Image 1 (tube, rainbow, N blue to C red):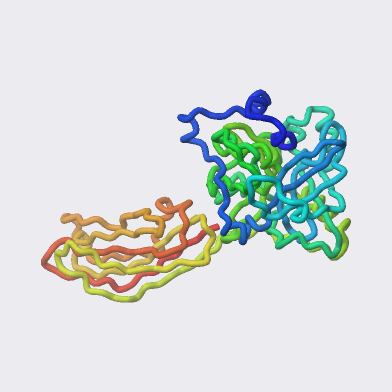
Image 2 (image 1 turned 90 degrees about the vertical axis):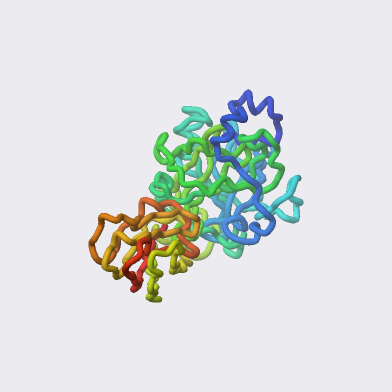
Length: 401
């Protein structure tokens, strides 16, 4: 995605460059950017994302970037600082700007310099700026001084490729000048695409592609985020796109080294990012016993409150004890905070087995991908008359990333 000229050309020119816009029918199946609200701009990850203003030669360009890993540096993409064989002479950053027009000079902070991936300019010269080889090295980090503080930095991953290829929750944030999905102007408003769980495919490692996920010219350099234990974490940088795809440079150890060089150039102590986290898990018990009404159409409900987990459920297990002479009398189902339902038992007059006893029953396939935080509810009733059933207790175990 050649974002540098995006704000200088009209829609016809964008279409000629390959930034065509989908029809209404296809637009229904493509996830496009939406404007970030003013309230969201005060919190991560939006508060750490901003407009990058670039001067290369006599020309001015625009892109996106984010304060990431360290408050002294800005993550962006290589093609934001390189054009026609020339590197940028000036790089400025306006954090969390949101408006129809460009941020005022007072909102911009000028960076001292930048570091970029070794071989990026060579790949551009040999294969072209819009080549897969160039996109696979399309990463740059701007830096300030030892006392610079561009804002609260987003956490980053050393290996961003793996989670980008998974079904973890993801989101792309930045400043598209034009919205590929609709053709309308993005102004200088911050936008987000997602959250979404689509997995990226490898074009030329670490250059990845998301199908039917779109942003727009001007968004290049913006962070591609993955939810890690409920925290939006930078896993990649948006570097390319079309009216139906988004291309991302996945973070690697080489990119981490570039960031370390930028921090060193800024001065001060270098702190390496934490390693990727694993799934978080919580178990919630409900021991509020209850005698179920005999032959009733009404359900008895027991609740399990889940909070503080990441927003992508990876596993749900249920331990349950209901005593009854006839298990076939019971109707039991679990409802998630997002409204998904999984039946545990449905009445069956031919089932004369006593008691319903589950031990870590795996119900994951009904809930994977949903947000596990909120109130889960277990509904129970005794459908047939003639005997009584008693709920003794249950434990819900939920894992997420």
